[in-house]
Length: 233
Ligand SMILES: C[S@@+](CC[C@H](N)C(=O)[O-])C[C@H]1O[C@@H](n2cnc3c(N)ncnc32)[C@H](O)[C@@H]1O
Image 1 (tube, protein in one colour):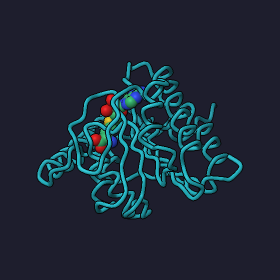
Image 2: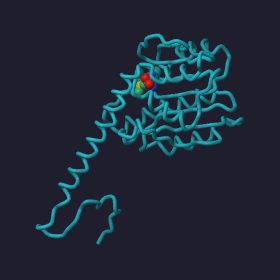
Image 3: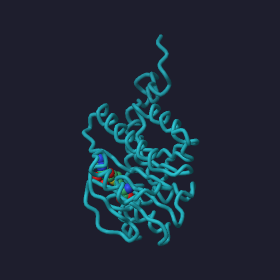
Image 4: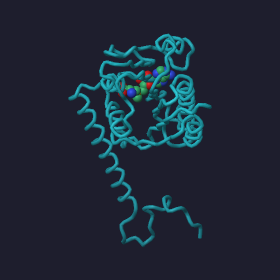
């Protein structure tokens, strides 16, 4: 008999017809997951609107920052894929009027105090040239990337697009971070994940995975945090 890995046989039992079959259990699990998804999503959407944050994503950055203490007054922070502005809001608030956030997005974004906004495609040289002007030769303390390409539903090509963008963001961080700088990026587990973690390890002294509570409902989403840009990178 073929021994299938346990996760493939989970919920499949052969006790005879009088026993409850696996389908109701799986349906229950799917319902529980859907309930959890709605619950977590609704909770943070409500909180964001009550507290004046532009996105529920703001809580993800706040939760990561509560643990990792990334944001400090006086820093220069680059926020890739910043619209509608939740992360930039969080960063600008933590800088307490000292330092600057430079946000980049394809979409328009309403102005925020302490944030210089560059509208454009991060993958295009013209946008990078505008970002270089905003940086005016300074190195950043922190590069954030919550960018997500448009999803087509075709998992293989979606993952490839996620990691093509992630590679460019990593390269940007390598070029524009100061030596002790940090890089936080959203990625999706699956094809390309391990290779990207390896690439991050080539650039940073430490690389860690973060799964903030506010993103738990998004099962494949996680954040990678690289700290301590390697001199040789
Ligand atoms: C999940 S949203 C970011 C939410 C943001 N962190 C917040 O808290 O409001 C992802 C953003 O990435 C942007 N994006 C995706 N690809 C991009 C690209 N090539 N250049 C610039 N922005 C991009 C999208 O337009 C979108 O606004």
